Length: 323
Image (tube, helix red, strand yellow):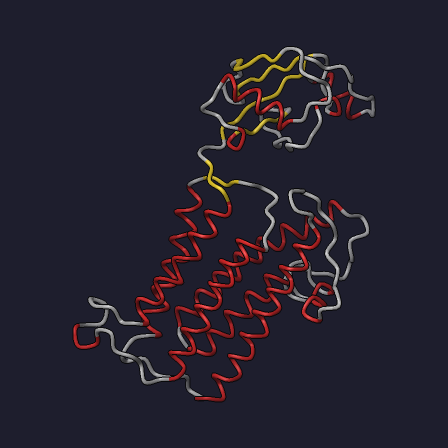
């Protein structure tokens, strides 16, 4: 194996007529499977399917195959004969655990906040006390906040179904519990205070609400525009990656300055919602969301720089000129 890696590092082409594949456990080095007469142009995805026939408990989505026990996972589209292997390819297997589709996770984590918020908005029994059951707030901002919150998550649900194209079909099952705890928990916390019978409107009244609403609407439109632009970059069913550039839509011009303007607009939406409601839980949700999206944006920015040599040098990950 060391010899093969050395050859690859020195630029010596891999042996093209590899027809046998042995799969070892990455932790124990135990031989799990030996595949004979494998076509040299077979992809890793096809090898995963062959492996599943001998080990049905490990369906392709939960398999990670790699050339080194501690190395990176090979991509499904990688072709066997193009890998730095000999006549018998040795691949190392790791179990990724039970998997669940991205669509299922997104639909679950977004439907929850939509439903939970409405429970507080309509003041169903056992939340604020019997005398407030199914009563309505007298403050306009409370009703406006419900409309904005509901619109945001309905938009996310529709984008999940009709806009987003996922490069990976699944994620670990445990993620759905972590994600739902985050989204559902914050939704309940925010909704409890915003819809509380003792809630007081923002300090600067209608002017503050109007300004915040304008920020929210602009950022929601911007976020949707970026999602559509990203969708158009990737043909259906492919994993093609291209450099995103601004289109004729003015909301996409933020691509001139940042790599992930969808995150920029998302954070802006929640800042607008926080200003509108003047609610501490919303501000904390915005801060936590900004922190997480900054991590994601930096990761995507590094990937763009690594993959594309002609990537625009002036772009920052999420905040123009700063971050």
